[in-house]
Image (cartoon, rainbow, N blue to C red):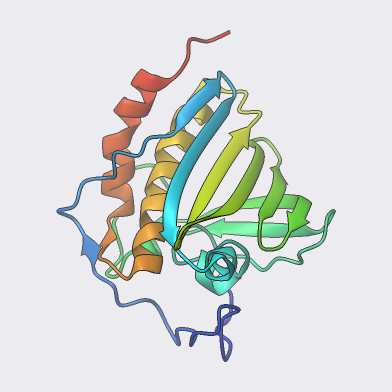
Length: 203
């Protein structure tokens, strides 16, 4: 499911009429801003983004903007509202960034909004993969984004989402800042061993 382009974004800028033309930056390594495992089932990761806060909020909640760094899918911003996320990580860069063998070109998840406080907080349930919270706070002329992923019950999943959130957020920073977009799959592949090293011992 691809979100259809409309006249303008919630942040007031023009919407793209097609796929972004930003080139994947294959030379830039992933950022060194690693997430932290608070315990064996909880990951917290932060990024500072150019403001204003309403623009960052739009990149979290508007399907056309979110598909540029994470996953497509329209949201109704009400507690209890269902929505679908559709990942096409190959398409986060243009030209497409080839996925590793066995990764698949598309993944879908049916989620439910748990809390919403525009433009400060968004929390949703991701069945089988836990619970995700986005918190936004002003930080001078920037915005501090904190992503907390709780109830990660499988170590395989803990490892995957650590490298995944890190790389997706690097792409979000590039999209908002207007800098070269890093390769998703190159970043994700290079980060897995580092997140495995940082994982807490199994309970």
